[in-house]
Structures are given as structure tokens and as C-alpha cells.
Image (cartoon, rainbow, N blue to C red; front, side, top):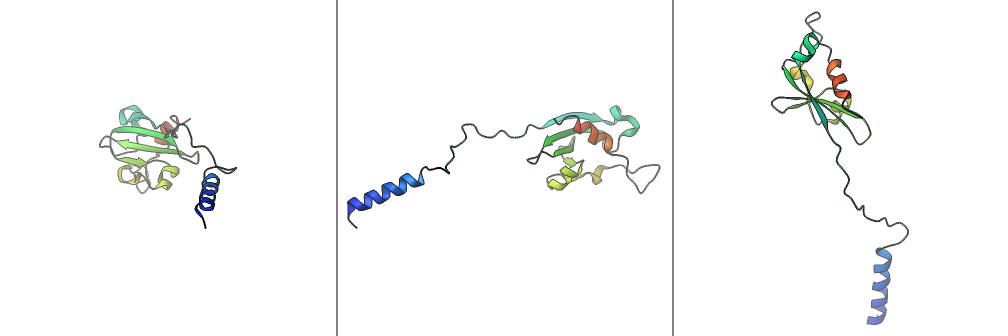
Length: 125
């Protein structure tokens, strides 16, 4: 193959590889990470409904990539625990069982954690 033909072939390959119907422009702005919202929550605030062995922390809610609401509890030492099934299923958070109080009226059962989930869900859109 002579150099002229080689140059034409390379030029065509370059043109085809750099454009065409299926090419999409690069996004002009990087995707925004989900904004995590959190709020303080405490035994003092929830009184007898408080379901944890720690006295306070923060509840958090963020939407995952599928639109599910991930609700967590963040203790004062910075450990983050899953509060709902979406958070548990992600595998990213500690299980809440480690700080979940037993129900004094039914010792094998745990206290209702729904109050914390509800507080967290208030933070999600």
C-alpha cells in the first residue's frame, strides 16, 4: 500500500471513529451527587417511644439511584446504621440491631423503630 492510500484510509477511520449518528456529546456539567439531608433526634425528644440504647444521634434520608428512600441513623460516634429495608439492602450501613432496645412489655421483641423511620422520611423529597 502506498503512503497516499494509507493516509486516506487512516483519515477515514479517524473520521468514522470520532463521530457519527451514535455518538453523544459529553455532558457539560458533572452529575450532581445526591444531597444527604439529616436532622437531630433524641430520647429527650421522643420520650418513651425512643427505640435505641444510645441517647441521641441524627436521622438521614437520601434517594438511591432507583428512587428508593434510604433512611439511616447516625450515632454520635459517627457510625451509620440502616433503619429501613432500602438502607439494609444496600449493604452500606451497620445493622441497627446492635443498638436497638428490647421491648420491655415483650422482651424477645424490639421496640418499635417506626418512629425513627418516620422522622427520617420527613427529610426525603
